[in-house]
Amino acid sequence: MLSEQQIENRLRKRVKELGGKAVKFISPGLRGVPDRIVLLPGARIYFVELKRLGETLRPQQIKRRDELISLGFKHYEIDSYEAVEVFINEVCTS
Image (tube, rainbow, N blue to C red):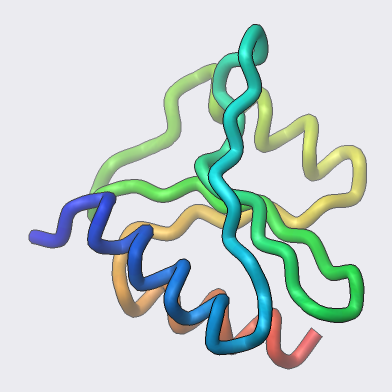
């Protein structure tokens, strides 16, 4: 089974190939924020939570996800290389 770090590395590599950045999101004092903010050309911003296959979001992560979505941002949960490719394909067509 792939580790979260392996999936994260694949995401970073694929985003870089698109000319973007997948920056680590650390917010002291605000628990449950997504792991990465993906910044793509054209001022496109996506929030990504990375998990190992089969892991689910913790309650605080669900709260942050719902807040981001209510503000109009796109939030993705990625748990495999295949999910990375689904994300890449979606953001390439949006």
